[in-house]
Length: 465
Image (tube, rainbow, N blue to C red; front, side, top):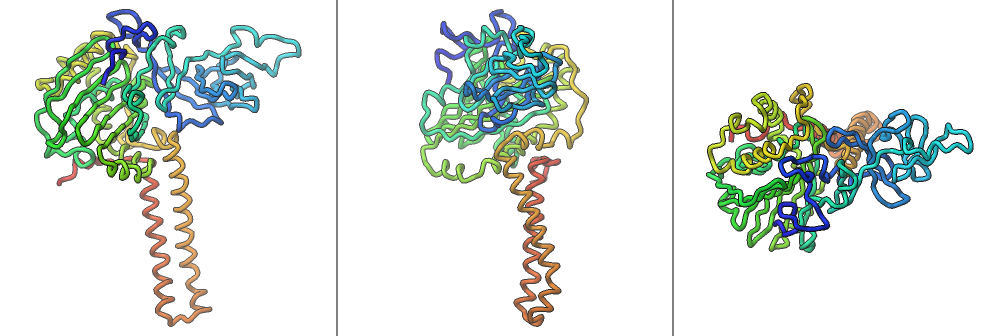
């Protein structure tokens, strides 16, 4: 729930809302954006990311014990820092000529400089640093005016700080091949769940009228209430909150449980964003929490990737069709929104239009991707997720071992016949069973391995049931 210090109604002298000071214009640069889960960052290497079309590099400054973000260009010859390293002195070292930089962005060493030179003292020798902050397990970066960073409220779910006890938190992220605007619009539409995600997290048999009502709205977001749930068992208080420009959550609070679906949509570039999904749970009983904890993180991520892919294809094309029809400024004509189930979508698109909140105005979408490219998982998730990356490595090792054992057991059959009693039924059974078991294990592991690389071509909802 929103407190009185929230960005929707901020009277605090310490914090200013995101988006800049112009009342009718939301400046997307003037906001904090999450760029990585802290648990997935590697302190030993620089990590590249693109935020609002600007390439940045994230690296661990051991001298200040904090994460830093620089524009990913060395001031010398514009080489990418992310192709370099964090050197033995804990400095970010450019891969081109070895210039090294402290966490403040100051150039510390120029190897090509003669003894006694002081070119590193020039302002032109400094790397461009962006403000960073750690909150609730996420690293946030502020791409706007540096002087506004400390005053601008970081968008977080206050409930996690106000009531820290008892939450079970599941995290997921993925790079999505469509706009942050499209992702948030989709998430602000709960009525699609039973159809789009039938057989994953929804059931079309539960589809029914859904009345949504916006109760608070302004430049810095809006809040809405649900008059009923997505199924007959979903009782209690239900609300949706959008904190501009990148955060939304659904909050379902009943006697048995409080379930929150929270998502950040961090814009990378036109037609691409990074999604951070968080699922905080509180249960009256301990049993659901125990069951959820038994599921490995990588297994949860495979399932959550499948849910994302349920609507990935048509959303990718939908946003392009909307742009052809005039975008958010013409959404009332491009979309036909006759029911109250579309109230949050209407409010969101109205917010984009009213406050000129398009992060990449006038830019064209990149060339079309194939269906297979849209459903790839390795580059969009696995390689940047510690749990999935490490599990994939183990799966490959076990797969190789299973294949090797199967081949060796088959190759050893002639030796068994020579040294052992070839008429033994038990020997014959073992000679047959061992290769079969390990061949079966090999193919099961191969099937699991593929799930770290690619998604389902046909979503479950399209199978007859």
